[in-house]
Length: 235
Image 1 (cartoon, rainbow, N blue to C red):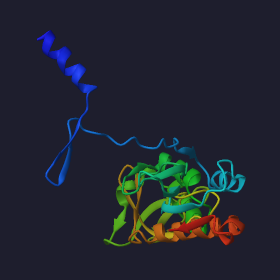
Image 2: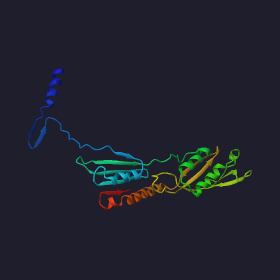
Image 3: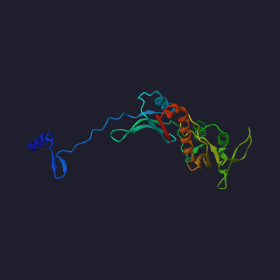
Image 4: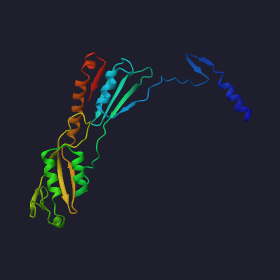
């Protein structure tokens, strides 16, 4: 067994090329040595991406910038000798978490609304309703399938039935902070608890708007590099 293993190892260094008919064969399989590729640099802002591209830190190599989603942008070079691309940089947005289509108790919902949404008129209306709900009167919620009403404080010592706004136009933080956050429609629902939830109602159109906003930002910030042909942007 050991003798056979030694013969095999010795044979590895004796590669022969044989020509049989019109075809050429080798006694050992050959593997192409790939070119080394750099590790992708990670940033969390569009400004960081722009700073990297304008610095020409890695030379004056043409780069394509691809807006893949509202939260991710990647930069890569053209094909190298291995017919592969060098992914030189990835920008991934850091955004607050909010679970759409899930109910929160009124206190946590209030906190999420204040911390994860851009200020707007509809946001203020929702906060006013949620912040003044009479917990002992939650069972008096009225619902016709579309609109809802709840008993809430309307003054220092008075309560009355108020209409829950629906649908509402809100702008959650869902993309890079450097660009305008897309505003879209949501279905606002409440149930006993009290608990509240927001359901997306724009079919995902906000994603296209966010990606367009990112592209517009980069077109303005990298105008010189684009004009010179060193940067190409797609979305």
